[in-house]
Amino acid sequence: MTEKASTRYVIAGGGTAGWMSAAALSRFAPPGASITLVESDAIGTVGVGEATIPQIHLFNGALGIDEAEFLRETRGSFKLGIEFDGWRREGEAYMHAFGDIGRPLGLLPFQHYWLRAKQAGFAKPLQRYSLNELAARTMRMHRGKTTQGRELPYAYHFDAGLYAAFLRKFAEARGVRRVEGKIGAVEQAADSGDITGLTLESGELIEGDFFIDCTGFRGLLIEGALEAGFDDWSNFLPCNRAMAVPCEGGGDFTPYTKAIAREAGWQWRIPLQHRIGNGLVYCNDFLSDEEASETLLANLDGKRQADPRPIRFTTGKRRAHWKNNCLAVGLSAGFMEPMESTSIHMIQSAISRFMAVMPQAGGKAEQATKDWFNHQSTFEWERIRDFLVLHYTANEREGQPFWDHVRTMELPATLTAKLEQWKASGFIHREHEELFTEVGWFQVFAGQGVEAGGYNPIADAISEDDLRALLDETEMSLIEQVKPMPRHLDFLQNYVNGTARSEVPA
Ligand code: FAD
Image 1 (cartoon, rainbow, N blue to C red):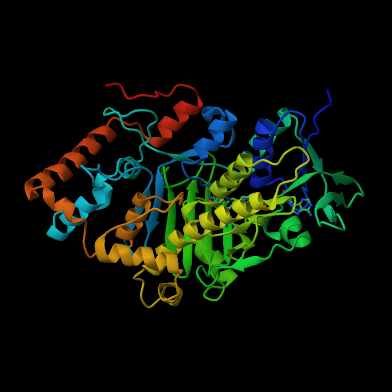
Image 2: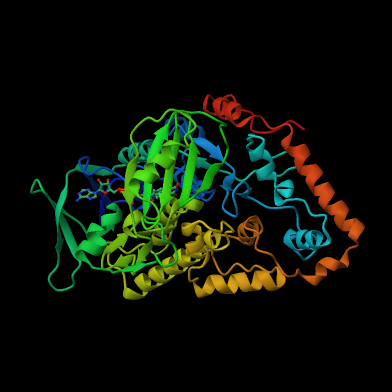
């Protein structure tokens, strides 16, 4: 029997993308595959990216990660949604909470009943009908079934550096070889252009069959060597700078991320066990780095732990995420600002899409597979982009140059279509595997004050009394489910120490 050839995977870069890729390959690559990761301590990682969305459970679950250990080691916290403070106008906040809003009745989702009640003048704000938002606003957290058998969908906040270290431990324990060093040159075959190896500045050559570019914004392999090209989306999302600073704990230990609109951008706040992660996202046409730094430092809940660190980026994506024998994962594939915490998810979805069509031994894949992969990625990225743009275009912060600019920018045609549909009839349609569901769009439309001109007439089939009863009962039932939930901080401490209840007793 001849021995089956295997694939030599080489991962360039050891940030979140590199170590997530390494962990996943170490778990799923067929026996015989070798996995080498090259990273440079001298270059370091981007060091931000600390808020996630619930899909992360799929990744952690596939790897078999123990949740309590994960939270303990990454000093993480729970996350039930994202609060958008001041995005519509100063002094008004809404939440994009995970999970359902209200409950469907018959054929229709709740949104149409809410829109009818709103037209009639008796609908309460959406938060009254969201289990996640009611729990989040009262600083509570719960895992497992509620008294009425529902669950709180949740994600995590975690320390980006500790997360990479956690995954590194996981991957190295499963045979991943880590090489420390700076990549000086990318070697390519003269005929095909395929990458054959990475030459480090030390002179060491790391050969491989398949390469995963996780080198961050620089995209050393996918752009530097393979020239995949970049679609610049600054015309839709003009922010191109961030200033990041950690501070000591202070204020509420929120089980949610905050995205707070500022005069020329917005600020994130991510509470962890040992600190709060903060940053200001802005556009340099409207705010200087000095002003950004001042704004950020003036708005911290605790003493700063470092000097503000500037980060530059251009919003957009590589034209091809998979080219030749190289896959771009993470920031090397592109970037969109983190208001909906989507980047780590996009790392994970790139990895799982790759796993679904993993090349045979030797790392060769046919062009049709790469085309499929790139087509799926483009669809995913464009639809996320549309959702992000919605937050900006629907603002009422008139008289503030940055907000005036983003309110009047051109829109992607796909977003215009969604807006028109909502404005005319209150309909929202999720296409294929779009990341954000109808419930997510509903919350942002409602939160940003985009009025729906109508609702599905089937919602008129019940009497107004029944509609009032439906809304009241929904609200009361959710409040009752939230009442016995422990405070987020207590729950987290008990959970990481192994003493938390996983069920609320009936
Ligand atoms: P990096 O962290 O930059 O890692 C690059 C790696 O490549 C490093 O190990 C580096 O040493 C190595 N490298 C580069 N060049 C060489 C070389 N020549 N030789 C050897 N090694 C090299 N995502 C979220 O999901 N949620 C968030 O809340 C969020 N917030 C963000 C806020 C900001 C301001 C930014 C910019 C991003 C945010 N992200 C967020 C995105 C998230 O940070 C990234 O998706 C994630 O960290 C992955 O980064 P990376 O691993 O691709 O790149």
